[in-house]
Image 1 (spheres, rainbow, N blue to C red):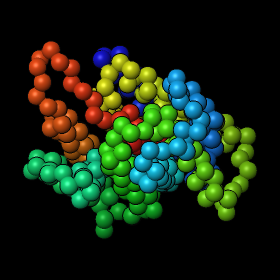
Image 2 (cartoon, one colour):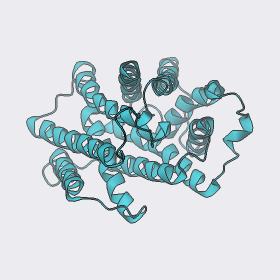
Image 3 (spheres, rainbow, N blue to C red):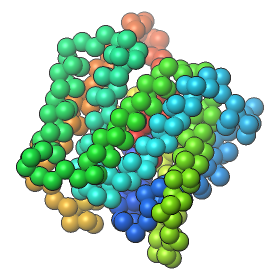
Image 4 (cartoon, one colour):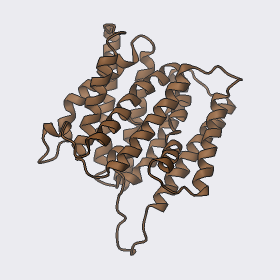
Length: 306
């Protein structure tokens, strides 16, 4: 268990540094172009995630095609939206807005999955939105396109989680992982055409670094799930906010003011509470000697990882 948790923390640290690379690329390249090259190599390497019996055709052979198609689309467009957010917002602020995702999952679960949400999670959702208002401060600071992109990314990621729950365990792990790499590459490749510009040598280095982090981080997380249930590892994702604060300050000279730090703390605390509460509610009473079963897929545990 401990080894799995440590590997999960390492995976999300790599994800955070990958997002830092995206920010370093800046506005020199179209966000869809960044996404395309960043996911092309992971897609080509995705067969390493195959288990005995898996086939390449499993990438397009789905047991629940409509739900899988919707899930893949939602997760695929999350990455370019995140790229837009990281390019125009302070690093930690972008992460905080993306971490609104658990609250949006709770809201969507009410309307889509017809789940009953108790008052504690309801208060946490309200707190998260208050935290976002403190960060954005509409009317007191400029509302940038990056704010909208971050909120849209959080909503799409939440939709990916909901469709993942609806799919359950009907699809293979290679299918769930590989189709995201494939769809992200294809969708970004099509959308990058109008604004395509050939990368400079420096940009090529950054794009390769982004691709490497995307692949290595996903591989580390999958290895982590071999030592601990995926649903126990989701909380490690919130360590990214600490990396964001440190990277933003040291490399981009971004120092959040006191109000922004308060808003970030509220959003992250609300997300952690929702995560902990869901783990408590979905764990049925069992004999002390029986291990708790995981009901969360590997891909669901890290919906904002890209």
